[in-house]
Image (cartoon, rainbow, N blue to C red; front, top):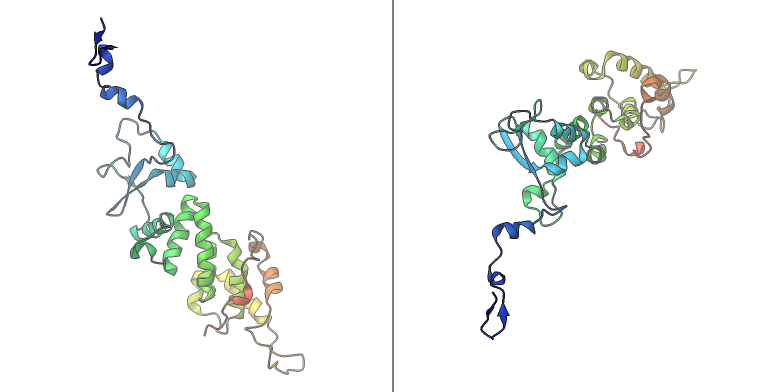
Length: 258
């Protein structure tokens, strides 16, 4: 039976009962965007707890890794006691990747705002290539290009081949052809004997003297000579795999190494 309220109106008894905790939870939902699962990685002796979404959203390698059923065991990455182990990499390499991946846009700390070094960007290039982070790999390539243009080209060629940045090959080979210093014995190992032989052919194409034995002077210097056509012919097979390289201004490469 309804009973009279303070104002004489009838009021159902159940209406004054507070909703239960279960009723409250029925209305609570996870936000479709801003609700993150975390994953715990172990690299060497360091633990990293990071939003899982950044990894599975941008990398097919991690996406497949996260879909592997754990079986009867506790899923790796769920806690500090059961981290997901990342083998064959160093903690500092992973830190470089995370610095780019999680770079804050607003009010970064001094540590967060610190620019990566050349080696740091190489770490990013290595891991983004290994794990298929295409967008971050592109950032690493674009960031490394102006840095490598100022270095000796042997390292540039080696990085291009190691991480399959084919757009670097032609400008890097051109830089080596223009270098004033001759090829050194210690450069045979990183370049490979075939490259050394081919590069010797390219470098020897520079016209030091005319048919009468008169040496060129003035503007005709190795640093300004255009070896592109010779490089295309000598390294034709390797350059077939190269992506467009027009984005790299060959004229900005430093050819003055001694």
